[in-house]
Image (cartoon, rainbow, N blue to C red; front, side, top):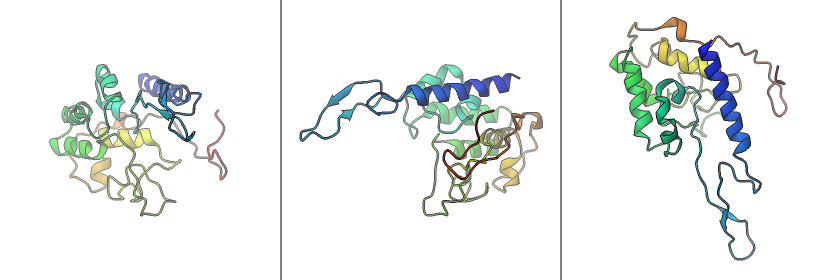
Length: 198
């Protein structure tokens, strides 16, 4: 129940950040006014202020201490030693060192990666990072990808060893490998592609 509540809050916060982050001048994530207008009447330049960093759902929520969220929200994704270190240290508390280090290598930096030279019709969450082991080498995120279950499976389950990335450490916690929230995958072929909310 607590996990569902947390995931629900994360979804609500993300929706609020997306909706609330759009200012009247069309900039996203900016709370600062325009800093000047170039000569010739071009578009206004807007100062950017990062307010959230949440590329991969469940990464910060699972691995990082809550008191560090604001610090990493304002960090560059490739320069965030707090999140990087906490991925490994959290996982190492109950998994072997190889699993903890592999999780860190796969999940850091907290950005969505995609290889545009691959087939773009077969997106697969963590596909780029795992060399296609999760479905395709394109990476990104497919509409049918159950991101939370994939993330929990990697952390608490045997996902990484089942994909042949590392040996099984036999320290899985099966009751934590899913959020138990079903996704019926009844998407459409027209925008916005997902079914109406229940």
